[in-house]
Every structure is written in structure tokens, then in C-alpha cells.
Length: 305
Image 1 (cartoon, one colour):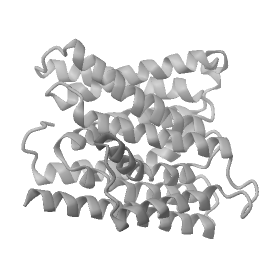
Image 2: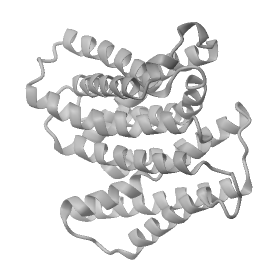
Image 3: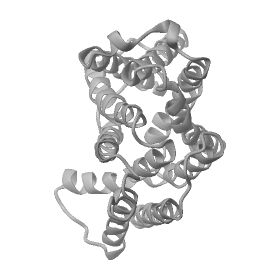
């Protein structure tokens, strides 16, 4: 995919890939971490996809990346893949996949907060403030132990919030840091660095002692393959490309669909509980994201005039 003058059809195809595939990856992660330690699982996923994509991009004529490009890839890969995806895969040992998706759906809200901090100003639009309050309310509905004792692991929920913040910061950084002109090459570099950092995290936390190849179940093996091919090669590449050619408002629309896909699949396939409280939290979070994205679109159109 080229980063210049993208066609409407290409943008729509990339969005659909991110919508549907990423929504299903939460369930795939749940099965993958059942018999594979989370950080090493994620490392294998991104290293395999990143190395394959790097070889493909270079074979197609992408120039050798500069040291500054590798530094940018280290920052982005560290934030999005180690901090963001690493937090998600670790948390899914303790939190249902559908709930994890709902927590991660708040990424557009954190992106607004981080943009305010980066620009050193706060645009106190009532709709934005209302969206942020709604988003926090949605998270509170999911994690409130008084309303449903034992419903959600607090540590897992806290790690998911931190992972969402890290992913949001990485997404913003990818729009401002110097990267190769080839979107495929830059995405491959981010996955290679992110995969290497995840491997270090796995070694540092003693996962190598828990990894037993003979104990890996067929479900975990197939889930890892799905994550590497579809979740990384297809969907993550599409997302990274969209960040470079489309507005944040457009890219952020994946937050509408991903949690719905994840919650339905988790309930239908893995038997995860689908309570009225979960549905209420989902509607509140999606509404908050919708308000944020609608406001971003309106601001973008106003500035373009």
C-alpha cells in the first residue's frame, strides 16, 4: 500500500480489515495464552509477521531504513506493541476477551487527552468533556466491585487502562516521528522492534521457564497462527497505513465495531458471560467514542474551509 493519494476503495478495505479482524483477535488471544506465555506468544506473532513483511518490502524496492527511522520504530513499537498489545495479552489471562475489547475501545478518548497535553492547550468543548465523562463512566460500570463482586479482576483492568494509554500515545507518535516513505517497511520495523521488546519482557518475567512446546494445545497454535497472519500482517499493516493516509477521526471508527465483534464472539464461542451491565457499559463507551469522533470530524472540516 502506498501512502500517497489513497483510493476510497483502499481506505474502505483497510477499515473493514481493522474492524472485523481486530475484533476477532481478542478471542484468538484468549485461546493463545491458555498454553503459551503471553509475552513470548505476542513476540512470536510480531517477529514472524515483521520479518516476513520486512523481506517483502525490501524485495519490492523499499530503500534501506536510516538509523533515525529505527529510533522512531523503537518508540512506536515499544508503545503500541510492548505497552499496548503486551498489556492486552497479559490481561487476558485474568479478564474475559469481550471486556478487554471494551476497555481498549477507550483508546480514542485517551488520544484526545494526549493531544491536549501535546498541544499544551485544552479545548473545553462541552461535547468532548461529556464524552470523556461518559468514557470513564463506562469503565466504572465494568470494574465496580460493589455492584458485581468478583466480576472483574482489578489488576487486569488497570493494566488494560495503561495498555490503552500506551497504544494511544504510540498512534499519535506514528503521525509525527520520521519513518520510511514505504508504509510496509515502517510497519515491519515497528513489528520487529516490538516483537524483540516483547521477547525481552517474556525473558525478564521468567516466561521461558514456563514455555513447553509439547504442552501447546492445537487451539493455542492455531490462534497464534491466526494472530500472526491476520492480526499482524493484514490488520496491523492496514491500521499503520491508515494512520498515515487518513484522519484520526476516520481511523478511530474501528472503536465502534471492535468491541461489538469481540463481545459477541466471546459470548458465542467461548461462553463468556454477557450481562446487562456489560451491555450497558458497552453502549456507554461506544457512545463516548462516537461523540469524540464526531467532534474530531467536525473540527477537521472546519479547519479545511
